[in-house]
Length: 512
Ligand code: MZP
Image (cartoon, rainbow, N blue to C red; front, side, top):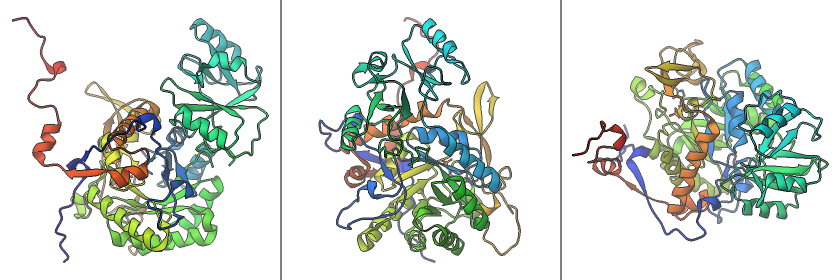
């Protein structure tokens, strides 16, 4: 056997060392745009510009193709803030295609403010309600006229157009108008204005209290076919969605998903270094050409990566055994520490790019238990990450909310558990069996955490802030400039609260 000299390491063993933070390097100026699908570029340009990719995401975060994570509701919520979901494939072809359709048919845009509006409220009710709460508001209706059906309310307390409060600005607008949720949510007003100017868009940016872009307001008569580089939507202004496939029923599943409008597919397997994956990729490519974007995986080393890339994969997913619900390492003894896997595969990707001019993005999948692990994965060379546990905690995830020991939890179960019965993910073919022979995942609970957007905003604020510490304004700079050190167990202990009793854990204090 080949025995590797280096131990297999994971994210919690690394720390980032700060670089010089220049004055321009503020969180508001950080761009998190990431490539999803392979593209060609000059090998001398390293790392290459992600905008050359046929599919990009505005935040480098995707949700796992799991029953307890990525249904249509989460798909919509994540796409609306610039990320990407992969609808789970361990369901019938019809129901998966229907979920894809639900996301694609979602009318991009419109928000209901935090007042207690029912989605079907009549405009007059809505305005009366918001008048009572004392906020100036702009109502968005489906046809852009005051008699249209209410789609949402923007309160001037929350939003501004440029530096002008929303209600004042809207008075000067030509009406009717339509507000479109911006997929580039989170970029600064200045960045938004630059793009609007460059692409000659006939619209105004709406920003939130942190001066980040949230909506674009277009005149109702704007050219609907004009390309809007500020949105995270392919050209019909529909949200972007991915879908999981397997290497068993792909000849029927892939056409159904493509017809439903899936933007990108991904083969879901616990071990992707297999001839089954090559067959699946070849089917997608021969049937759909460059329109059929398909990721493959999971692998944990250079050989696995190169095999899938040479088979035609558009991106490669990295990680075996690191998922929070995963017991593959315990059951079968295979896998690799997530950090070691990402570092090796990122090097293989760079080597392949320098040799061929083809850049194939990699996704670090599983094992992210702290927000800072996202930044570490990106610094180590992942183009984007995939998370399951993280998203399972939110309202939009499919699991039920339950009370356990006075705490609100959500259900989260692995695809290799008896509950999911996703045998295709673990099947090696040949046996003719269509069931799991043993479990590789558990059925569990995770603490309920509320709305996706609220949590993701905090996670992204940490990522942006750390990138500034590392002197990086975009993900390419982070990968090039980051300096990482392996931390000893004693220094990891030093990084936590130590030698003090945290105030909220103390018993009631008394004067001495
Ligand atoms: P995590 O974000 O919960 O740590 O990991 C999610 C990832 O774990 C998924 O994207 C998938 O690759 C993997 N997964 C899903 N089900 C199982 C299982 O039952 C599993 N073993 O390992």
